[in-house]
Length: 215
Image (cartoon, rainbow, N blue to C red):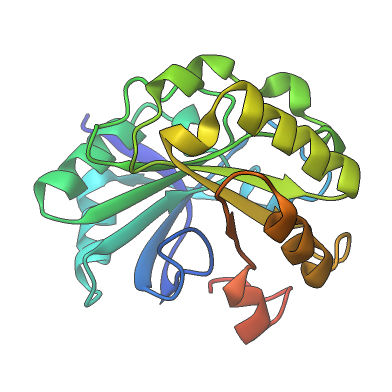
């Protein structure tokens, strides 16, 4: 039996986050996640999905007119089949980003893949799940994301950026939790921060609405 993955959904949309925001992208959402963040907006991916062979997944990706693929979840690194999926896409000339919750080591991720790696803040309820062994593995093309639910979250994130010299290693992203932190407030905090970072909103929610799936 060849490589198989449990897939929640595959869809073609505008990338709403990261440095690729605005680019037409194929999203491959894998099922299951080992964390239960308080603000999670993809709980439907925890269990729901169908096991599909790698060839079937690739064929669906090939239908769309873009060379950008975002592998997301759930938590993609919870399935070993994700590695051959990413490697095959890289070999086919795709630009691949991996959205991972930061609780798995990224040491086996193909080096051409752009890791968009969460560092879970205290208000997420999963701060103890952070895999700090990922910090030495960061590449200049990678992106560290802090999802901020309060001023205390932001201050904690700033401490980590300083302690681990994250802004010198890769791009630092800040994103407000929808309904918890006003975007204007977080933008003001980012402007006052003593290190370079990038403020982001979930563009897809602004376009299609917070509860819309498949976008």
